[in-house]
Image (cartoon, rainbow, N blue to C red; front, side, top):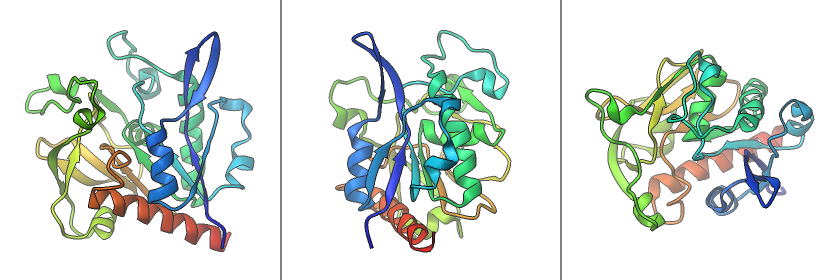
Amino acid sequence: MSKPLILITSDVKPVDGYKWHAAPSTYLNAVLKGADAIPVILPSLGDDLALDDVLDRVDGVLATGSRSNVYPELYGEVPTEENGPYDRERDATTLPLLRRAVARGIPVFAICRGMQELNVAFGGSLLTEIQELDGRMDHRAAVSEDQNERFKIAHPIEIKDDSKLADVLGNEPVEVNSLHRQALGELGSSLVVEARAADGTIEAVSVDGAPGYVLATQWHPEFWVATDSPSKKLFKAFGEAARAYRAQR
């Protein structure tokens, strides 16, 4: 059987007078090597895209992390300059994309901003600048130009027993990296907490009753997929779900 096609969300960035629709190479390589699948970048063209026509042709959706944040008005809050930057063209594409992919049973793996998009897409909210909240750790990345330092393993997580994440990762202790200043607030409809950090921050979710594979992490397994066992398992499981979907569609 041919390798599955994985649709990857894109950021919109101004470069040299153009709008570039781009995705970081770490996600592309994690899909290619960790999931043994073919990555395909989806441009963030919003309502101009016929999403069902796109989804007819792919076997999974990976919602990536990003420096930008989901626009606060989409979950009932007021946007501020401090909370930015924003990428409203991405929002207009990924939120309906995630709703349609989940409804159709297409495997979904959402990471960092992607997990926050998934929550907002299903009616949930986000907490901003969580390092300023009482009792919360500072989940932001180290200030460094060295990506290995920025993405270093930072803290353990507590995985719920009998959860989808436990099914993927097993019983081994799991420590993750941390590069975010936002977190999930009120959960969206049907979203279920799969893991938390010691300070209560939601680190992983799934969608209860979804007809297909859906898993989301606040941390970045794509960066260490070549060397970190939990990261490898997450992308392998996503790839297996995509192959199973391809075989039956």
